[in-house]
Length: 337
Image (cartoon, rainbow, N blue to C red; front, side, top):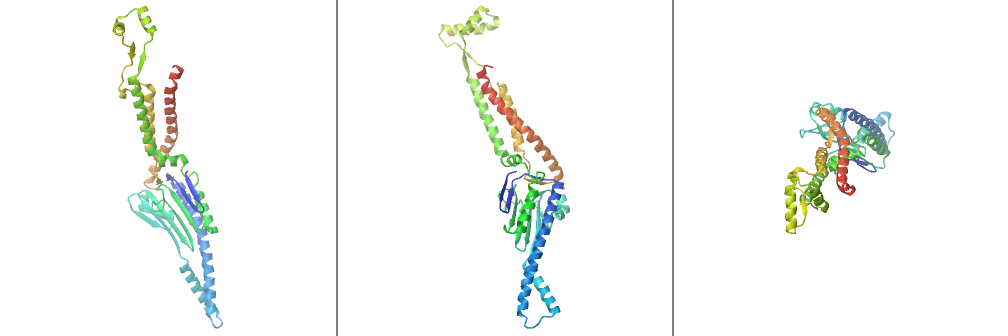
């Protein structure tokens, strides 16, 4: 996977193909880390409430009764909770351009509208007593649409660093994260496919033009062999051509038959076109940028995982065959084969 890490900010390039099992594990990790965030929040509330309580008590001119002290503490705690707001919001964007919101991933994925559609993107936001977390794939805040980005602030907060490390570890798990070559395939497959096609066309035109214009001089021994062996009926036209060329002092040459570019006279050129066609199809049909294997996405996820396995084996084999065929066509004349 192609990834970038800076402090408590992480971005990983797709394709993100997440199955139901992996989704459950990610949801559990998020829930566990929210417990840590809530503990931090409660500690901040108590700290802020204590400050407010001390401030209120400093204004009291007489001894405070137990009932009054309890009232002050309750009010201080209430005000502290109002000041230190906490937000936990998850937005799922669906294939029909709608969206749904929930507090947790587990809750959102159980909703009927999510089960009946594909999840195309998500955006998770946490705000709690100065700690902020954002995790998602939305283009509005991600440089690449296929990226999953994670950001936790403040960077110098121990709980924030712990939350960041736990979630990033889960996202980079090999069962969840895409392989580096698959990420490269998603980002560059289309341009490379057209480059392969254009290179094949150029090589084909050059090869066919060279075959079309090729000439080779008939060695003198060919004439000797023709005379020594006798002129068969099928060789009369050739013998007559040699006599006329000799009579009128024309170059004694034999023209290589002309070929149509569509006939591919060279065997290696046929293989090159076959390999290029296979490579083009494999490179063009790359996996989606983001797919979750629940609801309508379950069948698509299975098919794409099989396609990735097939392409991962086939594409290098085809590329090696294509390069080997081209090298053989170049080296073959050098060895007189």
